[in-house]
Length: 237
Length: 237
Image (cartoon, rainbow over the protein chains, first blue to last red):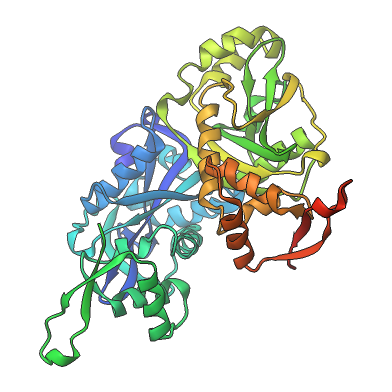
């Protein structure tokens, strides 16, 4: 696995990064999860910080290693520093240690206290090329509206990332980063509904979004029944 | 100093917290700075994280130790994790080491790489009772509109905290946390102007703030020339 390829002296002790990688796919908001080798333990895409690497660069590297992507939206959103956050790490790693590394040194490293910086990434589902690395044997795009138990406090990390999306909904226009270059009004509405966790009245929503004066309407989306085809929009330059 | 009273084994290596403590005083936005003993080196209020302490609790403790306050606005705003951020720490600490601790162990600890979590605090100037601790011999409320050279990357930390204030200006109503319970329209406007770094037209500003529907007007502020006394406002419950 990555941290045994290198010596643990290559990494800063006690600090990790975890990326919540969001993508909008088939009208669902999803995030990337990875399964540890020969186990049923799922986690976010995470890693350590090199001795001479900036923390933000570590997050970029981890995102690139897992998705193949560079130059995507990637921002710090919250630092998870509770003492108790990996108190059950030993039990979780005991389940999988035969596969990911068997020395006591490894286990001591893996189960020591880590403060983890949470990063929020937004990617284009179709451009992601997931690479499992040396410790995972499966990946899954997890729908945010369905609960899946994750490793350590990774469920809390996802929850906090969703809150951050909600907080930035209007100010940072994050929703539009989740969409392709052109999109329909109902696709935007769907993302808003997912992030806000509530249904929205269509006419009010359309009025509100258009009043932001950030969209331009282009042609109608091609479909069989042309008279019902919705308009496509894109962000103004 | 604090970290020699305890052994460095009491603290997590490589992680610190730095608090940008803002207060609004005499129509100026200021932040708290402390001067290292017998030196001209100024820094923010910072500290380390206890082995069994949550990072957020460490920030609360540091804020309480320096200001005497609890239950004030205190939030993470950015994590400073660049490799180079304390490359000149040794030079800076060499200047002051005779006073704050003279062993090589201390200097090795102080000058090792630290990733620092920045916290933004908002306090009531009149309620602060600054306690210098064991490493400082002076404090100052630094006006944000005047530049003062600070230790390491602490100027960047202050700059980023100001950006955060700007980002949250309308959404989190942080400005109102900077004000006493009742305030005049010109006091609110002053804070907006400082945080935005620009002059604002009075009538437009007043209309905008009132349209948020969050303020109630109470009585006029007492003054000698009663006919010119401004109205006082407070936040609605």
